[in-house]
Length: 148
Ligand code: CA2
Image (tube, rainbow, N blue to C red; front, side, top):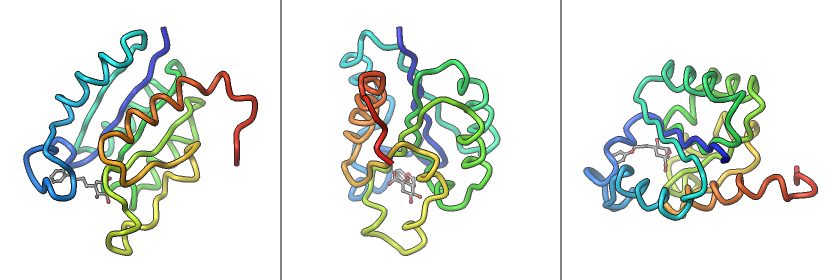
């Protein structure tokens, strides 16, 4: 069974509780239950932390044995060289996801330290971005070439 990790960074534990205009009104835990039903033949793991070191530890722990990573590093996306280095250090393929369209927001959100370590980035599609990213990672074996 394939193993995919969804990793959420700082403040994403507040999903569904604050700022519904930007991030929607569903908690990630609730959304994740639905994802597990959709991908019932996949070992889908979810980890959220507000601490950069814990996110790094999780990437190290899973990066040599999991088949894929869906990462929304929250605001650390725009600041963390350490997370970028961790993604480079492991063979696990990663897709970056943002719930909001970071390019329609403040200029400081337009740059991501993670994008060039990921196969691709999905933003602005709400929580559906996570499902699309999981689908991409599951189909990766079947893809003859990786588009760069
Ligand atoms: O759009 C995204 O998914 C972001 O990664 C979310 C981050 C933000 O810093 C990035 O620029 C874009 C912020 C996560 C905060 O999540 C909240 C959720 C509900 C209520 C308040 C914050």
